[in-house]
Length: 227
Image (cartoon, rainbow, N blue to C red; front, side):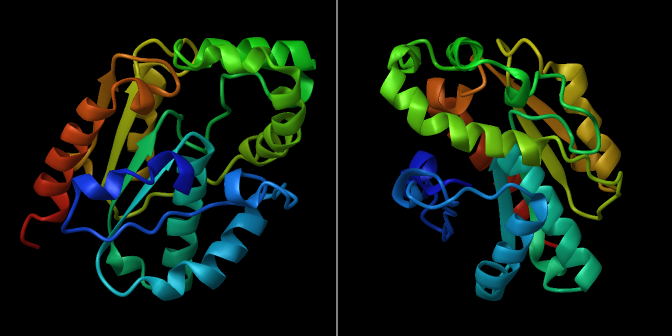
């Protein structure tokens, strides 16, 4: 998960240690070139994150982060590299990565269309920032790089890891039916579920307290349940 957005979550989970991933081109690493392929993400996560996993863990990813989380889990399974440590994957705001995303790629949009799409996806209380041309000039290269990665379809692979999916009920293109297709990627059918929250693509910002409450429930019911 991107550290800037989730840096306050660890206070709500005192028994967990959060490893917040900040990717190139974002926030504290804004001056770095963003990755443009899924392979680059997995190579770097395999080098820097996987060695630090020493106890059972949960992968949490939002939007593109959920596709990256799944790809990393698959890589760990394929390499037989600590994959038994992954007790749960929580995927937010995106359909499964083996299916084409119904959201139009930023690569085919004009700058004005990208700004309009971001405003539609965002928490209404913060959407006005996308009217600022300086901000848009800064983030558009990152968004287009993300689109290159998001457009990469992953193989349909069943993993023996529980998956929980969270989404916003106001997000037009990623509806509940599409989110439910994450079930095609897990063998642990008993724990699979989709939770919808009252919000847009950034629903975890709009209704953060409810998201954290539900996440606590899911961790208790799945991760903390005796094996």
